[in-house]
Length: 452
Image (cartoon, rainbow, N blue to C red; front, side):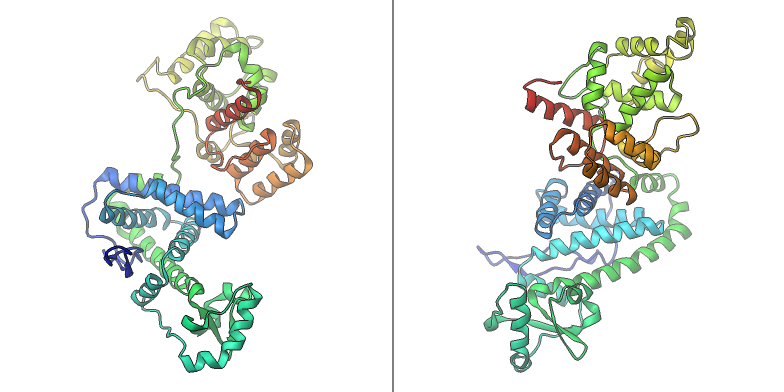
């Protein structure tokens, strides 16, 4: 793997340390299959965290802190060389995962570019200059004579941004203005005869433009290799992992009750009103109203109830009682009880099934008469608005949620619903219905001194 090194010196011993790779070629390393997947999932947590931050409209300084925290939580390794390897390997695995469609390529390119931008900004000016040299950018620093000739204009631009021009050690690069569109549109550079004068503290725009262009082309080439050879050659080993990674749920499985233990039948009506996410609240209301749910709805709600702590005996009693007006006890025991016990790992292969994540729920396609799925994706706008109002959202909150829905940010729409209902922020975002329940119970506990 070609890893480019900047030359940042340690303050204590002047040792040169390596940092940002440019991901020019895949590493000639033997990678264990489990590391292939786990490294990619760790990086995916970083990229999805960045995506959530951008969708929530975080400011640049907030995004910078978010990137640092995400990287520290998911990509750190006690040994520096292993951290670099993990960085490089995980990038190339995800490049393979996200090269396969235009939509996937677009998302990956945007998130990797944002990650690179913030990591580059965190480096010292010496390290940044070294990286520019390694990237072989065709730009030279403006000479002292030319700097003096435009110093007043550069000073005006700096003052317009509330900054001072540090003339003593100022370094500027003269580049074609079309290569720094973000700086031009923000009126943050002086333009003269088709060239923009870019300050050293703005040089990230130059590097990021080149980085984005390179990764964009690399994704197209990777896609060609994937479709022509790799997919078929690795159909029994890597292909299943690659094809599953872009839809992988990355959080806890909630197969067992978490910190709030068990709930009983007598509690379920109350907690459904206070702590069920809209997808589960809708199913719960429908089974109460219709005394029946189709298989998809029973699976989605049943596994959720298992995850929040409804024991098997109580689950059997709950479903039997709700179905009773339409289904006899004998028919229930014959047609429905087995599947409930199966979900709890008491029948068949004794598999302990896990509750569905948001990603899985969003990806299903409910049929006529089905009530499962994600309301933010599958409801009509009229029905979704009405459901949000019934949950107690204000008109402003409803519009905020609908804005996320229109932009297909369904989990963020659910997160905004949570925040509006509970009057409490949810910085991690909602990624699982059972997470919604647990976070809701925490908020209610902190407000009331006991779980609702």
